[in-house]
Amino acid sequence: MKEELENVGYKLAWSAEKKLSRKIDLEGWEKVVWQNQSGKKFILKSYDGSTLIMKQDSA
Image 1 (cartoon, rainbow, N blue to C red):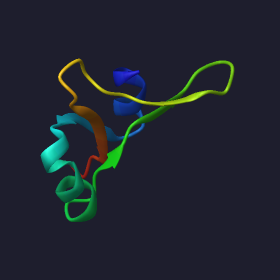
Image 2 (image 1 turned 90 degrees about the horizontal axis):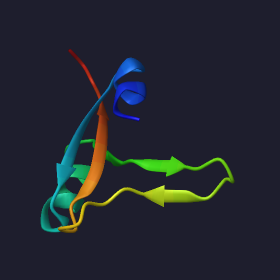
Image 3 (image 1 turned 90 degrees about the vertical axis):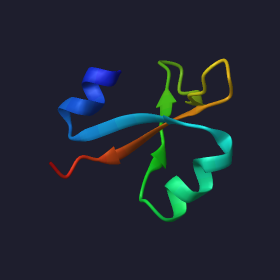
Image 4 (image 1 turned 180 degrees about the vertical axis):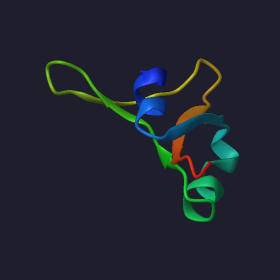
């Protein structure tokens, strides 16, 4: 998944819950939502509660 998103121009990062709204609202990041083969969508989180976010890579 990482390579797939990077190949289409996104960079990925993990964000702690307390910083998530700032990253999304002010910095232009968005949550990574992944859809499995049966169509179910998932927001990707780590065991410590961090959320995987992505942003169009401007470099």
